[in-house]
Length: 199
Image 1 (spheres, rainbow, N blue to C red):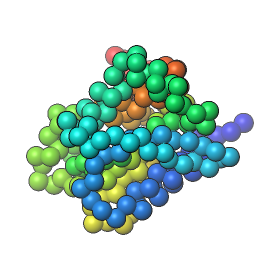
Image 2 (cartoon, rainbow, N blue to C red; image 1 turned 90 degrees about the horizontal axis):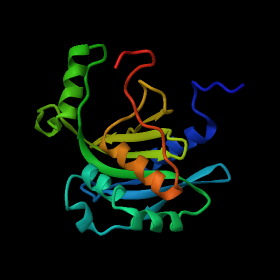
Image 3 (cartoon, helix red, strand yellow; image 1 turned 45 degrees about the vertical axis):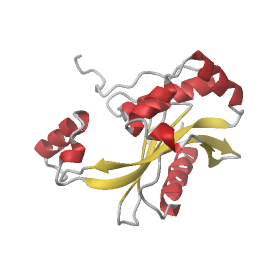
């Protein structure tokens, strides 16, 4: 029986492919980009969904992504018609402000989460500029690769759809909706609540 606590080979390959996409980018201050994610013969690859820069200039990238994902039945039918059999998920790349908290400092972690939820990260003096790419696959496993500006290092994260372990927020909500629109399926809802916790 496989160990579900560890990422599969395909999941690790997807995370590394996303990290490679971040590493290969040399310029900063780029427009966001929406990607299709494929797995062919066990090998992941990204396609580009070409959108005019004006689309991304119409609002915060996460809000634009949500608007695209909720564009309605006509767009959903077009996405489903365009989805090839090998479509495995959707990815989104953009630059953003990020913050970190010292390991083990629970008060700093709470403040970081609070500021993130209130969209105050850009106001913090300790903010850092990051380039990130997020992805959601057809099983609603989520992936993230991130690089701080001025750093060659890229970190990755893979999370299965388990209560208390989910990535949440506008970007993942938008990607969930796009995967659902492309594939004609409904993905399970996201939750930060731990199993057995009271609502």
